[in-house]
Length: 64
Image (tube, rainbow, N blue to C red; front, side, top):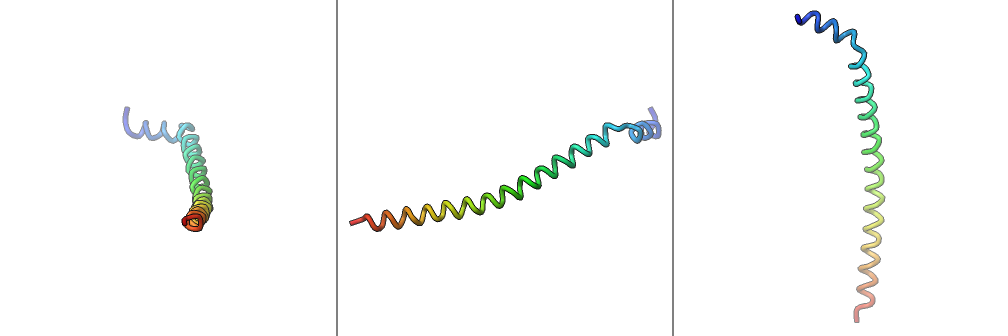
């Protein structure tokens, strides 16, 4: 096959457009997940830091 006929066939093909739509949706989902996990990680870090501080305080108060 010659290059012009391949290009014409690719331009008529709808599978490429569908693949791009799915790729765009996947990227969008990943961006939303990363943003959500970033917020969750910040609050989880704060919670575990508070737990660590409270445990250290409890241990230091119970030591003779």
